[in-house]
Image 1 (cartoon, helix red, strand yellow):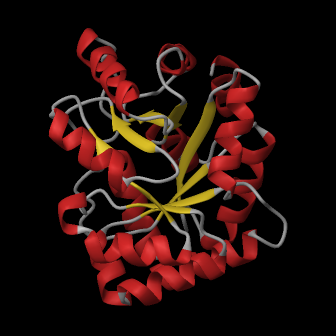
Image 2 (tube, one colour):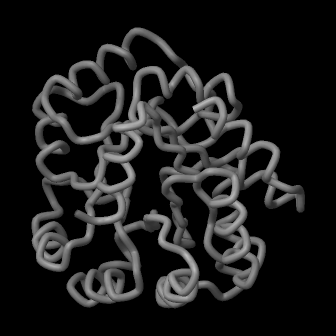
Length: 256
């Protein structure tokens, strides 16, 4: 049982839901990221997503796009993010997930990336532009080296797509709450609730919801129907403004 599975089992046993914050590795500077991870742990983060900067982040809205640009300007690469994870692992056992795009992984080499990620202490990977239909090689290596593969579902997902994502996903399933980019406004409607119900009828794997969650009220509403709540843009925005994230993240943890 890996760290992600352990976290969800423990939370379920205690009737709690997972708080999963997202930050961009290397933003505002590489040496700040380790402290931010520590701050998120202190605020009650159960799992932490680390963004890997990329030049064409198609799933991300303006706030996280600018974080990509700042991190790239700071010279942050996939290899440097893996080195950062190794450093974080000296003092932390909180599950860490990389959110990256496929191009850096492909350039690195699929098997080489998976091996190095696991060796560095990465628990799982989210690749928004890699769909299960085209991920057979990646999934095979991930299973071999025990790296969780977290795929995305959306309000528009058909039952066939839901089944494919369930079969391909380990760790948890990422439900995108909106048909848009990160930073968009959350819409808690019957479509979302019905889709989550459909997913949960087909699998016992945890389902975490992200995109559009920007305050404790949103987080509480999502936690009532999901196993985990993913919050990114609002945290990244505070970091970009040089503000303390502790008050927000603690309030999100309480709400969840």
